[in-house]
Amino acid sequence: MNYLLFYTFIFLLGGHGYCTLEIIWRGRTHYSMFFAGGIIFMIFFFIAEQMKKTPLLSKCLLGTVIITAIEFIFGYIFNLKYDMNVWDYSNMPLNLMGQICLPFSALWFGLSFILFKWIVKGDLYQRFF
Image (cartoon, rainbow, N blue to C red; front, side, top):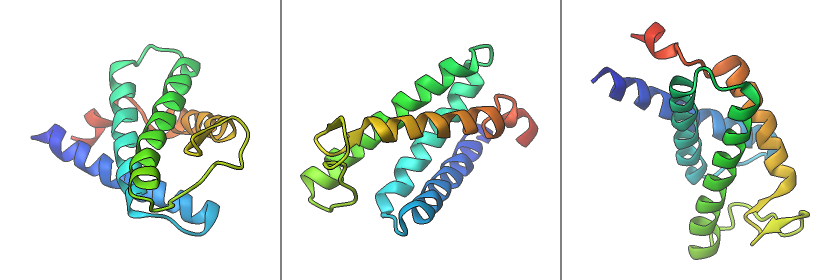
């Protein structure tokens, strides 16, 4: 039960955080980004708990892949299938179907570094409960 409460809190915090970053970055967000952010944050906390001894660089690379993959999945669903035009990276270099691109993946690496270095800690669950 405690894990359920913990990960629900983490999901809500991640969803809110992701939407806040989007509003700061581009002045708007979409409800789908709340769910993407929540899922990403939960996965990051799971990684931090399970991979405590893994080097920071490795966790950042994994985080970059995870964020990019979730961004592609959500982009495919909301932008391509449902034509909601949440974002479009078609004008960015090295993009895939306009849903992900190398420059934003580099940004996700930086975000992963910040999260794993200072925010997402493997012992947070023990301190929380």
